[in-house]
Image (cartoon, rainbow, N blue to C red):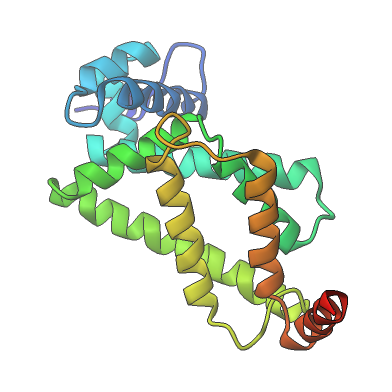
Length: 218
């Protein structure tokens, strides 16, 4: 097959390759959320994006690739929005904002995570992709924790990897336990998160606070 034809397969007339890829990822997020991973055919995603099956395979090697890349894209968009909203906020403040959003998550990323986790238990290709994805997220979070520790926001004695794992468990759990299954008051959830983050702060900063609380109790 002509090399130029191969390069051109992933494009919609008049639309850049990057835009075609973006359309495919958005279509994948919508269709996977509606039909589930196993119930979705590549042709349905291609049709929703307005491209051919060949165009889809020019950008993604498999349906598993498309699922996990859609997860990556939505995660990056969320973080980019949060950073853009307030570039000067501290790392712990950013974590609190993300934590509060988990309570009411309704974006496609939440549904994608559920589909990916379920599919990973049955499909080895998805499992391989999800291990890589989880590793990337854990590494990014661990680096964030190390930065917070360097800035004195978090206790340096805590394991950045364990903190990252804790954050992943919260994020994955929030995708499964949605408000329609079990709801909690927003302010109560925010107060709990604040206490948790405060408890993860440097030991010397937590000690005076504890002493003050004991003094108030007398």
